[in-house]
Length: 323
Ligand SMILES: Nc1ncnc2c1ncn2[C@@H]1O[C@H](COP(=O)(O)OP(=O)(O)O)[C@@H](O)[C@H]1O
Ligand SMILES: [Mg+2]
Image (cartoon, rainbow, N blue to C red; front, top):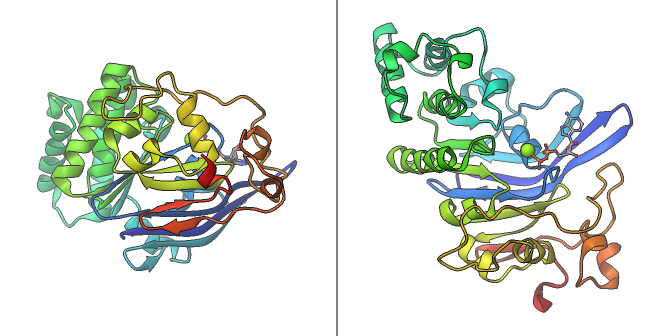
């Protein structure tokens, strides 16, 4: 494994008390692998990625283990972490406008990464910047380098952010809903681009999405999150064919098409499941999905099921054999 996350927990100290946003996440991403992280809005996907990259603010308490190629990231010094972040591990965010620097040209933002993470001289850095824009499909790179984020369209900004994330040849890309803000055609282009670059550069991809169609199309494995916890993980094929958690089953059933085979409905959005979203400020002692679950049993609400490992699958559901 290149990334191994164990018992990752993030607690936010807010004015209104504690919020258990990430509540014991186990996650693995192997070299060159594409892992999809799915779950409803608020389930802790973004916080998980930010915790891995150590980008959370100080009112967040992060505990657990994040091992990256044998190194523990959570206890690494900040200068050492800065070498890894943007170097070996790149990040792409959902909102390029918020992630890009509005007062620096795209060229300078790429250059910053190259200065920090490579030994290239100015001339070689410019060559590399042009090559990156070309790789992500931004034409007329020489002119584009001098432009600012506001001069780019939504799709182009997303491409620019990918170029910045890829500048130092990361071995892992953390991509947080990189296509959600884009229309379907551009979304397809960006996803295809990420997959092509992954193959060309041999990097792994942890892809957060709420689009199960995207998972079916692009991911090797999937991890399903609910209320800050992992419900199950496995190959996309296995999980979609036979979920091992009641929440995953409900998600798949809530999709427009229940077809989870080869011709899986593209862009099948994650449809909300009836019932209240779980409260993260007062976590249940049992499985957080219990109040909305149709196959629940008495112990579900009081005793938290542990994530069991079975071959290359994990799951945490007492109803696993009844699904
Ligand atoms: N900075 C923060 N302070 C307090 N709570 C936060 C903060 N960031 C996120 N949260 C809470 O953590 C939970 C998980 O958020 P998030 O990871 O963004 O969900 P997702 O990406 O799955 O939609 C949410 O309930 C959110 O309100
Ligand atoms: Mg998010």
